[in-house]
Length: 205
Image (cartoon, rainbow, N blue to C red; front, side):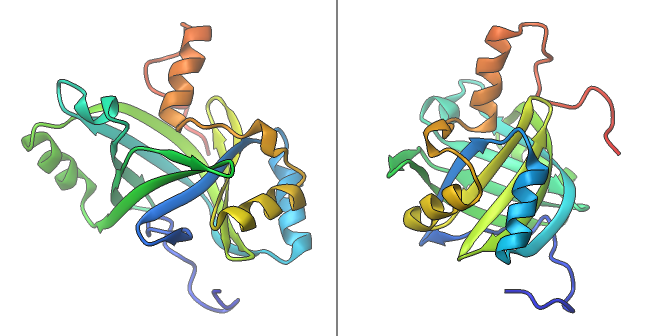
């Protein structure tokens, strides 16, 4: 864990607990992020990164073969830097979502986007959020505010995740198996007036 007097973490740095190259996480709706934050503080959780804006772009080829196979290619911008991420098809274990994940930090996101485009990938979807992260009991907990609601993601060992869900006052039965992109597609079917991308209507301070 980071000591109190160390430098703050880079919000664009790859993070999270995983086994090998697998990302193991659960996503839950959370109407009151302040209450979750209070439980984290009371339980002795350690702040990992302060609230920051993240802009995620998903890339695919013209045939959309990546998304059709359950894979994802994402370029994330945060804190003036970026992360390029590959995610494999999802599988589920004890309520947790498991995907192969490979990440690399990128110093110049615009050049990274240009490289992807030259390789035949196009930006297919953008989603924005404001995220803060905490570490607790070998898990990473992300508090996310998005244009379609507020959510908590917990990443770590499945048993530790289940334990923290209870300690945070959340309901594992409400776990969302979808990525933000999939969740937004489903929301747009209910609300066709929503824009094609999951973005804030106005710039958030």
